[in-house]
Length: 282
Length: 149
Image (cartoon, rainbow over all chains, first blue to last red; front, side):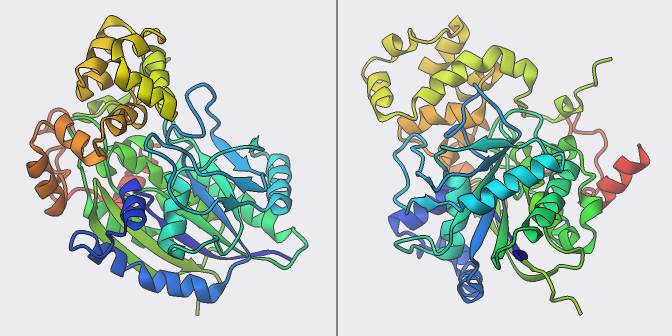
């Protein structure tokens, strides 16, 4: 039986990827952020997951406004790296896990989540930056990845509550897959940031802290936040935090936080990295 | 009845909803075309001619050519799309964020290093309204939302 063993919440700021690609992670600006990533990389290398489900959003790269799926699941064997307007990131191609991905697609749809299925899809920094943050710069990514792309570009994104329920359905589906696989799930994006308008640069540390605390203390209460409250409190792009609820819903109710790193600023954003594990509760 | 757009009370923020999507589609699809290296080269070589291939309104066209980043948002631009023009120009997200908020690059960078723009006074267009010291946390907000039904 496959099993979700841990969840990783990780901001996906493009500048973090650029810093790694250009080798500037040791500068005074970036060093404090990257120092906090090291323990997470060690933890993940030790865990050796067999596959990762990465919940992220596309930023006008694989998808345009022509078609806007709310939940899009990648079932391909490989996913090329997107050109986001300045050439593709120099990172390895992302290998998929078609067998588990198709099982997820079928299970989720029959479980009343109307997924869109992608047989071909480039992936952008939303997916590759969290991989870089947690895996460093290997010649090949250490595990196959199932991309789960959530619309947050065209208002409205799915609600936090819906995302949480999708996570719960993912957990049920994974546990019905009859191969012994150790699965991790990433919820990416956030934390507080606003990239647009006169209010650009908004950061709300107290909101972010309470949100991180709430993920283990009372995740269901967090799912009741409205989109307007995310945008007002955590910036218009802070609404990406709904994607963390997919990750949280896929974990056990008593999952525990085993690592937290939070840093301001990463370009325009409050960057966080949290690790939650199943089966550690006492 | 149509639901009120309560997010319109947030200052300096252009939520890309259906209303903005209806006017911004062509502008944003032009921006999307800049994901291709050959289109970036064509746009750089002949901005006016390249724009002729897209059905932009005169104001959208003006805003693009003038690199009026806020102006683009006001005529339906979506920041994830309009930023492609900035990338084409060799600018970063932080450069554009500074320009949109009307301060110098250096001032903006320093604001971010100092912890970013505070939500205090920036939650509502009528800044005096509904300010609570320290601001409500997610749990308070969630409790309030469920109390409001």
